[in-house]
Image: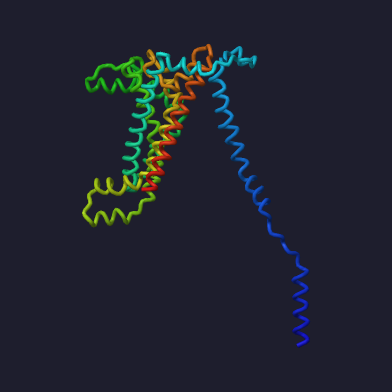
Length: 318
């Protein structure tokens, strides 16, 4: 009995002697959360908020090269916006931007989806062919644009040579106002298909094969399985793919600039090309109108993002 009592006293003393770790206060946990959040906030401020602020500042001042160096630009308010909206180039650039963007993302999505469904069968050369389709996405844009410029050359391009073999006459793809926008759109579609293929193929991997087996037992053919299973279940992936494609296509500059520089006669000038040309393409930089056009593009992309969020929330509530 005495032995048991002494052991109990020893255990009690040991327990009291062991240091107790004080529970972390709520303030300490809060500072830890701030420490983890700080890098993201700094990144957003440095690479998003500040450039946006500078772009707005450029658009409401008259930033000539001299004023840019001296740091004393004249405040003009919304004059730069009024100037670009009343410019003859604006409506043409807006129309070209709409055509270039909508045709590009529609064709990229349709071709990417068709290829994703095709490769989803996992035949023997599926992996090799998928890797080959990624080549346009991996090439530097200047290489891709230069290659398309050579292929669509009026005199010795391979496209015109192939068309002549079928009895079709020479087409001035890059030098005619009727075809220059089509030419740069075709090149942009070729560049964007691999991105759509990768994203949509990944989305197909998440669809259970049991659904297709059940549909097959019910007598559904290939088109019915695609329309009633594949396409509806790919809707969230399709939505984000189209949104990213829209944002990317709105700001395309390099492909158009290398192939046509927005010409001839502004036939392939988009808002992004107009902004770049005003700032860097004429030898006489006019930064303020260029920033105003850039801000219009930001507003269009922002409106598309809000529409995407609205439709997503509406679908979740349904």
